[in-house]
Length: 257
Image 1 (cartoon, one colour):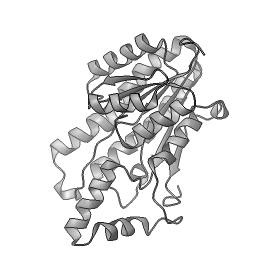
Image 2 (cartoon, rainbow, N blue to C red):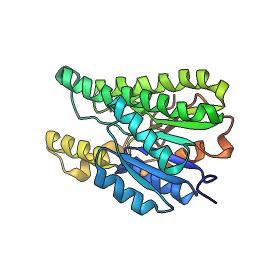
Image 3 (cartoon, rainbow, N blue to C red):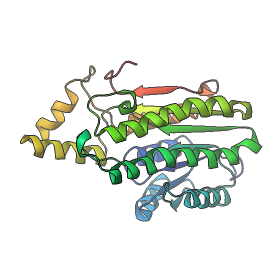
Image 4 (cartoon, rainbow, N blue to C red):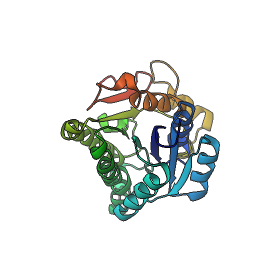
């Protein structure tokens, strides 16, 4: 394939966890990857691991001007944009009565605002070409999962689910598919930190805290980031060409709606 006919994907939050796993999975599937992250070194490490002409971009997805710069840089470097995986997200463990205005604004700035404006900016590139795939990483927290890290995070991910449905309806006329993935317990760096925090708070070992998190899952296993990456690659594939406006749980059966 030449640069012009190789399919391209932009992954936000690509420096670690689901974003890194997805970048590598897309590269393995033959895509040219743009790995974007606030941590420029982490983005570069992911791009190096992906190979196949991958590029790294430093980006703050909570800043609309930076989103525009990110997408423009990717299009200039890769020639076009076929797929965006809106993965970047933040959270912290907090009881509902302890969430601050700063917490709310930080989580919604990245998790909701960031996803919306990344989606919008990517669509501006896809509309003239009359094709594109937009995949948003939401969470079962947005579906009411009781074990969520906090209520503000759940609200931000609920916004992603709602946005996915509306954007799919409005962008269908341009042959753009919009779907989201709702991961359950996924052993990323962020989740590991939350589990460690809960272990310390409850006075139990880390192994016991992990076992406690996994116990309610019907399949009795947490996700590996690669489980989410596999769904993302599928949603970008020809086999998903007639799927849009959907939100898929990948959680071992933890949430069934």
